[in-house]
Image (cartoon, rainbow, N blue to C red; front, side):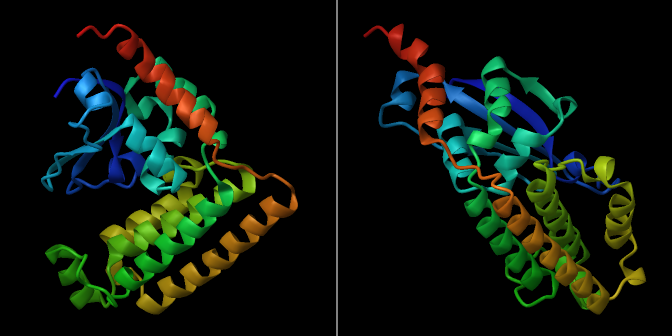
Length: 249
């Protein structure tokens, strides 16, 4: 498969600044096709998934990336807000996308997505759903009564959502903006015996209320944002039209 990399960055705990020596190395990237059959033909595919649990690599074709943005998928939203230094590839087309990011996020949909992700993580963190947990997390669940990594993810998501609706920032590198919280998240991850399931659930409940208030504040302040489909289509046109224009049978 021939394609151009539009953006490539580190993902997961290394991106968040919450990595430990045991952390897997995750990589995410956005790509565009160079082959006509894949641009408009029958051989299209939406992602390249090379995750093996050690060095995980996940790539989205630009069309799929924009579709996931419309659904406010948090992993692709992170690519709009991650600092430049997190990228090993950052093309001019993707820089333009990042510059227009607030026209590619529907805030109402984002709030609904955040609440959905949070509720799912709560069930995982408390062991109410174990089917999605790996063996290591299941072992921690049995040992501590909760899944530390899922609580870390849950708390991080809450804080990122609060920040987005309060000041328009989605702090991907959570430790840079909130050092004290970052320190606590690392402690939950590496020293779970210091925390209780009840205490962590209380912390999450408080953060959920703060998230609800922050969302209400943004709406009341008339800071409304919607997904601009025309802009998304223009981005696809700008990426692919030069290739189609030069295509020869």
